[in-house]
Length: 422
Image 1: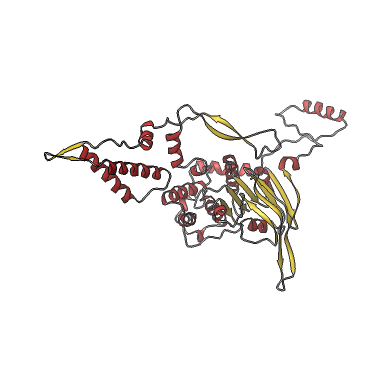
Image 2: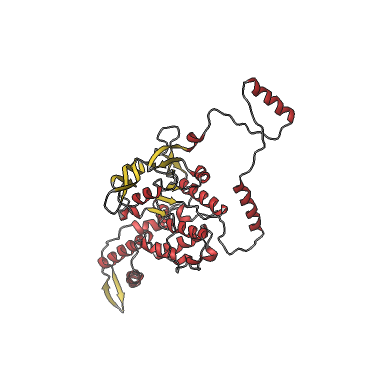
């Protein structure tokens, strides 16, 4: 599939009690969101942004038209499990703590207990709520509720992240943190669909935007192309003398143009963050959320099982491959090429690999002396036990492990057979 999200004449009409068409919330919407991009869906209140998101997720059925999400229907559980969604309002169970809330959503996705625990701790640390992890979310401020809402949207490590007003109620540090997180997720290869009324935030993180009004797209394209003023030029220099400024102005007047010379200013957001960062360095305590630049390892790295299997099966000296965007082409956002990446990890464990992949030796049974009596060891059953133990080891590495008691029983049998051979 070329697009992560694609709509075809998507329309939603809300009818009155008599079934007559009353409101065109979304009208003939044709939208394309490429893989691995941050797309901003903008518009004033009532323009159809939230209605569009709900139809993409299968929460609302379109009056006509169709929407494809990750190549399928957003209401399909297989597709839905690959989507992370932060709604405009945080619908949370107020009597559950932050840690219990994330555990609940992790169970909904069927995550194993060890994976849930690892991700919960990483996400709580990432959104700055580790210190209040055991407080009921009903006691959280709106900004803190948005933080835990973002954490639940990431608990399943989604391929597509849909954020509806993610920075509502957040302080400037939290807003900056969300924007940095979105950029890091995009670098990792995820697709982000973002709705926000804070246009400065959208400008900082989005690759492309579309502006809705009356349920229709009125303009869309690259942020830089839409905002760049091609009829003006801007020059930034270090501090220079007044004499040099007058010479520059004279040169500009010779070109029949005019100019205004001013000193640049920092954004208030930057100044605010610097001030709070200085206070944090003094180790002053706070009862609210703590800003952090950390991102969960599971959002940026392979799983433990994948790492182990890579070490086992990657031959020495053979480079791994990584996708790289192909710059300079019209389809640079979607075209990928493979380039070699040097592996810096440890060499494969040849001994363990041979134990896992080696076939059982089916030699003739050898006589074993026990209490001055000669007996034979049944080779077929021992070989079967060896194969079963190898399978159990591979199942544990790939996350399909059997109950611990069953593994121990097979191992005990095999060890008993080896003791008999001795």
